[in-house]
Image (tube, rainbow, N blue to C red; front, side, top):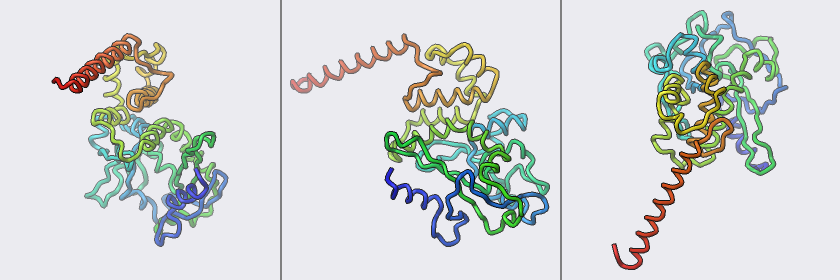
Length: 302
């Protein structure tokens, strides 16, 4: 990626020079310092917890639905709604704000967040924003992360004297754990984005992506109660892990989507050889029929 293209992307993300922008036009790294604190003594406490477009990552959903003692179906019905994500055109779950209460988050009270220890990753990062520039040239590295401050006019947290580095803030908020858990999901979004906006996945693939990304119970049923295991090879160790642990099931789901939807190789899951051979045989048979039909057309016969 050329330097001018990198600068263009950075400036776009930071909204550099735009009047009224809440994004400070300064690129930050992990050692960059800032002052901030949020607590009940700050006059704007919980003001930021309303009218937000919070996209829930798969790990966010797992943590929240387990915290609330809900199934994925119940959680999605009560607290989320599907949304097509930007130019990826992939379906994701968005946290449903309470429109009849001024658009506030369903989990916030005057005393603060009711699910604070399991809050979504975007809440953990605030007031830090995270972006990445994917390097396109061979040998240039996979991606370059950078950070920026989100400074909303109403926020008084920046007047607090507590000093952080970006890295110490991420550690304190446990955002690094969420980043690790969501990395493969983000890779799937970037993979689809690289196809271009004009490349649209079939409806069946979009439904599969949404189910695997948001609903662990349905995905588990899909794996163990359908013909899934007659089609794919999965190790006994992996089978045991995904049967017992939602997080392991989620990570297995990322591998499955990578393989089944995006056609990438996986070390965790593969199509059974007999199924693969049968599929190849069908394709060859279909091609022979098409070739024979074209030959008849060229010879003036139907």
